[in-house]
Length: 329
Image (cartoon, rainbow, N blue to C red):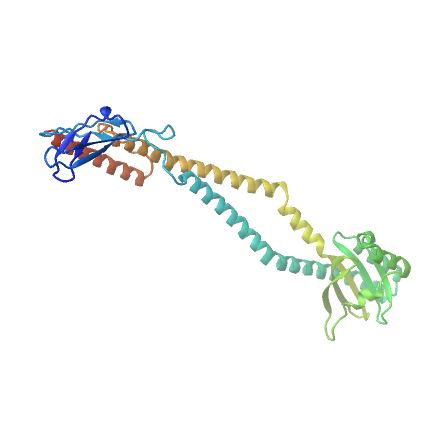
């Protein structure tokens, strides 16, 4: 163990095994300065650098079993950062899809519902035009009932020029709340419902969104030319909403999300092994070199940056070995 006097720089080679306690002291033979020596608490690896009057002994820390050749450092491993980045990216993608759904899908749904309602209403007005002209109200009721059975249609109704409901049918009255069902059974097709959406002056059709009996409905009123009558078609908005919601919750969609998450995790593990393993090996070799094993070759593995770092460590090892060889001479 090399000890240097702080006053005169006299060097002493001390055998630390002869120190009985944690500390020992002696007087410098040159200047009389009291030198305090602490007993090393960790095992040492001797790297002898012999000069004219001294032997250098370097103390090395004990190796931790967790890291090859050295102590495990503090901090978060690179694998954790990579996994966290992948999970964050997955959450950002899901959030982007959710934002797009909440921002654009409702307007698309409304537009599609309006188009569907207009199409059914136009078709309905076309098939009842001739029976209305001929005053064949039995045929008008048959057509109204047939159109009301189209999936997604809530109701159909025909109103003549005097405001009298000639025909009115619900697809499934039980889909509405109990109070609305009771009113329908007592008074028939509710005229108040049709009054909520009337034709503006000079227009042939008009739609309105309303809530009746607990159901959100788009009502389209269309003028039947040459008759003065109008037809009403109501379409469930919830039908389209449920279809899209079921599509988003379908096993196929969930399977795709699970596959994306699994692929992301596999990529994170691959990247962590590609980067983390060479780093751990390089750390282990560097620790062993710090203990005095200067003849070890540092492997160059992993990405380009890791290879450059390994080459830099190897050059440093060669330089240290050359410097120690010069000291021995």
